[in-house]
Amino acid sequence: MTEAPPPAEVAHRRAHFPEGVALDCGAVVAPLDVAYCTYGTLNAARSNAILVCHALTGDQYLAERHPLTGRPGWWQAIVGPGLPLDTDRYFIICSNVLGGCMGTTGPREPMPVSDGAPRPFPHLWGTDFPNITIRDMVRAQHKLVREYFGIERLLAVVGGSMGGMQALEWAATYPEMVHACAPIATATHHSAQNIAFHEVGRAAIHADPDWRGGRYWEVPGLIPAKGLSVARMVAHITYLSEEALNRKFGRRLRGAPALTFLEDVFEVESYLRHQGSSFTRRFDANSYLTITRAVDYFDLAAEAGGDLAAAFHGTTTRFFVASFSSDWLFPTSESRTLVRALNAAAAKVSFVEITSDKGHDAFLLDEPEFHAALGGFLRGAASKLGV
Image (cartoon, rainbow, N blue to C red; front, side, top):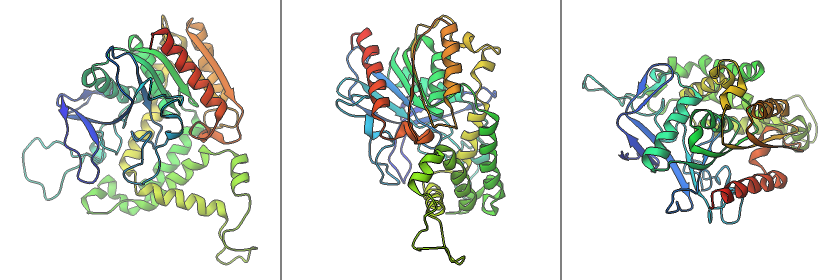
């Protein structure tokens, strides 16, 4: 294992695994690079590490300025000295998921060429990247944690949304390595409605002429921007509640006092267009297709033969499950289903529903009650290990 050379545009920190990783679909992705960021210091006993798993369109830049957008890290509000993810006490690891587009091996990374023949342009994985699952993402993270950092047991695995799915997969697949698990605003499988929203986004990308069957990368600078922008707009609606949309935008117009039926734009329309446009500058369309499919495939009960409790049978992991009252993407009922299964497996579990009108994105925003609950859970878990 060695540090892989960074791509020209961004100097990601990356761990390199020449042997690669075997996937659920039967394919092997080799070599494998895993891009990561860390915060805090790993103690001598290697007992204070917390793995944070990012959501669908997140990445490893958890608590620092993003190298492409210049924006603050996506969970910067809770990572740092004295904060819930206390960098004076814990060693925080966050990695870009397998299939991502910020340095970890995925559709936007170079594909190994076996025949040695020269190519007129860099040959990327693109749509040749195999189908992956949430468990495959976790396998890649396991290599980073266990083989690269030499950590035998994580103090905790924490994640929201798709990150919560990864946290649950860690607890199910590597229970001996997870002292505590915090799945937040998530579920053990995607609902039919959520799959439907993803399919609308994928259809928008496929319908963009610039997608070129997924080989847009053959034309320098070309991306299916229109389709990817629409996909982001559709998804972003699901991250907000009706209350949040009304509070932020209502029926206000942008730059006009009243409707004239000419070029008037509602503020909510302008906001969504901005979200879509900015997204195309930092995310790869083929990665979006790959990762949304992985989320749709996820079904922890199916992995355990249809019995969700069986996925956690005999576990010694401590769980903290959190939901938000206005989250209709992953409603509280999904969290309660998880908690019942954990109780049936005799797991140690605490559960909190946070009252919030901010929708699914609440876990990323200023929610003091949630921050206090998560911080208390992590401090309690750390004390049990003497950290």
